[in-house]
Every structure is written in C-alpha cells, then in structure tokens.
Image (cartoon, rainbow, N blue to C red; front, side, top):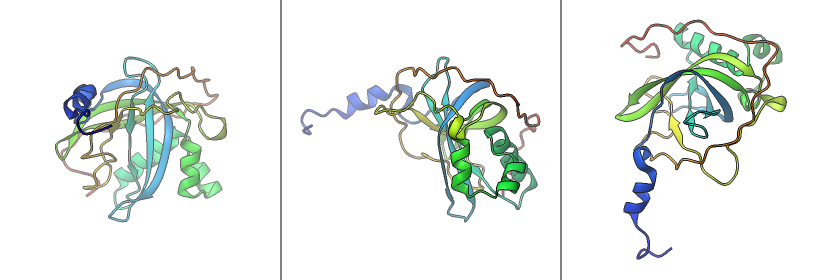
Length: 210
C-alpha cells in the first residue's frame, strides 16, 4: 500500500473507542485463557501473564491481558498470586509436589475456563482492567479448552492492572488491537471439582506491593 492510498484517519476510525485502549467491568464473567506467558520484570520479579478471552456475551472474542507478579515481600501479594493460580488450575499442592518451572505452570494454565470479576482502573493515564479470579469452570493444560480466538484475526486485548509496584501492565502505551468478530467458543465441560477464592479484599489507596 502506497502512502498516497493510506489514510491514517480511516485506520483510527476503524478502532473506534478502543483506539487509546479500553477497560472492562462486570461480575461473574466467564473467560478462557487463550495464551499464557512468563517472564521477569525490570525489578527482577517473576510473573505469569495470562491472556483471558470473553467466552460469550457482548464482548465475546475480546481479550484482557493480566499480569500476576510473585512479590514475596508482601503477604497480600503472595495471597493474591497463589489464590489466582489456584483458580487457574495450578494449586499450591500441585506446585509443591510437582516442582514445575514457570513455563510448565503457564502451559498448565493455558486453556482453563474461569469465572472472574473485572474492575475498570487506570495506570499512567491508560485505561486498565483489574482481574479478580473467582472460580474454576474447567481445567487447562492438555485436556483444557483452547478457546475460539485463534487464527489470523487479531483479538482486542485490554491490559490489566499490574500487581507489581510501578510495573506497567502488558500493552501500556500502545494502541489496542482491532476487535475480532464474535468467536464460537464451545461451551466448557464443567469440572468435577471447583476451586474458589476468598471474597475480594476492600480496596485501599495504599499499594500492597510497594
């Protein structure tokens, strides 16, 4: 495509309200982990980064990228991290007995279907989504659902609020990708056991990860 035929204005228009990013909110939302990455932050904190896709509803096919940081200096952060992994399918018992690598944990989480609460937030002026993992629906790993968001089309991904001190979440400062058409994610098979986490802690202005 030549510069003469390219219209940045049209490109901006195609993104609509999601040009500068978008956050989501709602309770008891079913989402599928379609991708999961691991890494280390600039501050040396290990993280698990699941990409969650809406499993039906008005936002079907859109995605939220969450970042779970291991911060042993904070008991609150440790509890949130372990409870979140438990719902995602990597229980503390499994981690202690199998002694998996971070990559193996990510592989076990991918494909899991979970119920979450989403809260709108902001980080450095960018819209963000805070994820609270509530309940497991079906396990990931080799036997889990992989969702319906694959293929050549790019899904819309909203960055989730980071659980690291000042660490920006994935995608901060970059435009959000285009929205894909509603995906045909198959209905998940209910798991024989359901993992639940404790009720959400009341919000506080003080960061527990400082």
